Amino acid sequence: MKNLSIFLFACLFATFALVSCGEKEDVTPTPTVSLYERLGGIAAISAVVDQFLANVVGDNVINARFAPTVADPFRTQLLRNNLIDQICAGAGGPCQYKGKTMLEAHTGMQITEAEFNALVGDLVAALNQFNVPQKEKDELLAILGPMKSDIVGQ
Ligand code: HEM
Image (cartoon, rainbow, N blue to C red; front, side):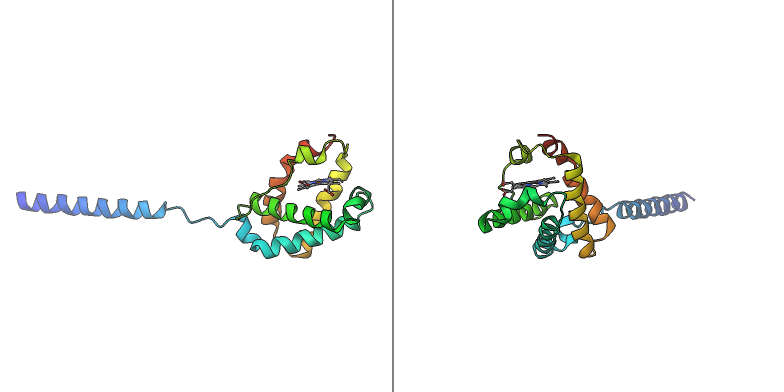
């Protein structure tokens, strides 16, 4: 009888241990894929930025702001590289943004909210042109959105 009790207790313990182990496996976190990777890496980000800049140049609400930049190939190249690095780094990619802070870059321009919205619209259009899914679009806009207060009205 004593042996049977020990045996039953051992079975109960073993069952509990197995169930516990199973529970632990269930809560193991799944690895997260960075926004950078989901966007398609540096090649896809560069293509989106090129389309974005083309949209900005064709946007009558804001293109006058960029006339001196477009007239100077070096300045255009610098802005392109800074935007690629900024998006890549913000999305968790292996880039380093080396440009000015958003406050430094836009101070003195007195950019309006309408102009800010127009530029964001040009970016969304570029993301749509490359069929970037809604989730990734939302995540990218959530990274850029908080920069608004350093850009508008400065
Ligand atoms: C989320 C919104 C925006 C982001 C992420 C952004 C980002 C940038 C970056 C990275 C630069 C380059 C900084 C550097 O030279 O070191 C820049 C410059 C500039 N931005 Fe913005 N910007 C935004 C909104 C705007 C808006 C709304 C306007 C005007 C309509 C604007 C006009 C300019 C101009 C004129 C320059 C100077 C370009 C040059 O150096 O030739 N930006 N911006």
